[in-house]
Amino acid sequence: MKDVVIITDPRVVRVISDHTRFKILKLLRKGPMTINELSDEIKKDRTTVYRHVKALERAGLVEEIEVQGNEKVYARSARLFLVKAEPDESVENFRKSYIQIEVERLVDILEEAGFKIKDRDKLMEMARDILNKIEISSQPAIKKISGSGIELTEIELFHLLNMLVFLQSCDLCKHAKRIRELIEF
Image (tube, rainbow, N blue to C red; front, side, top):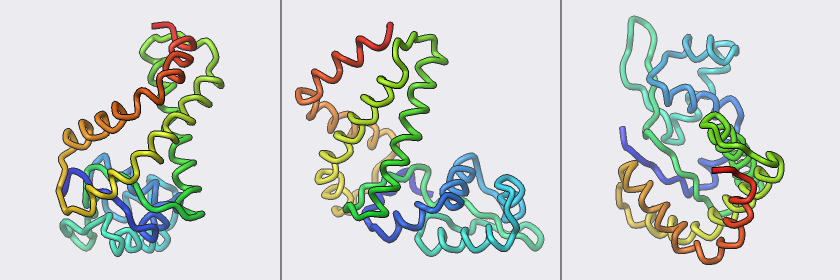
């Protein structure tokens, strides 16, 4: 399994844009699973789950890793997928819904850690806008790196993304100041 795969092909993004396939990838992040296990977790019949797993496998996102009895065990082909595809309508819809999910989780993390959020809705709106700006302006650099064939580890990707955000930090200063006003540190 690779650490990181950067997805730049809109066709692959369309594959993971499906809600069931996205759930399957999320479940497989916890560890390898059989069709039966996936079916039980997402409450869908085996045939439906099998069809979705095969679509993920054809897209290179899932792979068969072993056979247990008469069941195949599937795993993600990478620990982390970074989606940076050229925008089209389906890619854009997926990107926006994914950012919304991540923003909600980020705000939840801050609250669970004990930070006092003065205006949750405003913070979520601003965080969504900032993540959107960072995503869009980072796309050319990410695309160039993914096209170079360089394999990244998770930590290298983490540092690369931090560097890309840092390069945009001057443009984001006024946003950072407003967000700091919404969070009591």
